[in-house]
View 1 (cartoon, helix red, strand yellow):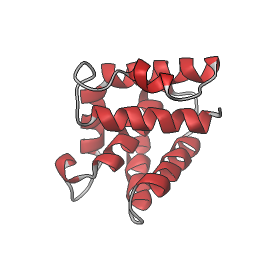
View 2 (cartoon, helix red, strand yellow):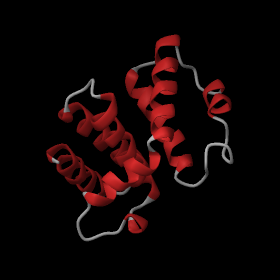
View 3 (tube, one colour):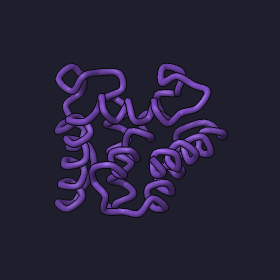
View 4 (cartoon, one colour):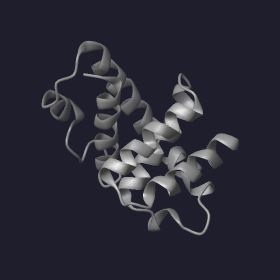
Length: 131
């Protein structure tokens, strides 16, 4: 399984996190057991997801500070989850360039969100990277 597929899994877990606290939602071990992840990507997903849980409120605030004309409550939860994953990668993981992070986020938006979401997400990521 590729890193792209691992990010897809992280996105899905983060999407659930937008609705439920980790202890209230579906346990990520159960979710991961249904996905075929190799050892390396399993470790990547776990590290990422645990970091997102740890910094979730901070990540939401960073996103909120970088959207223009919207409040965070008006953002589609799919777009919010994508932005949280990208923001975590930019602010805490820091192993990929802004271009890679933005490209992966845009691909998730094209796959899971509306036709206009990917340009919105790209703009927010650019703002976060600049700040």
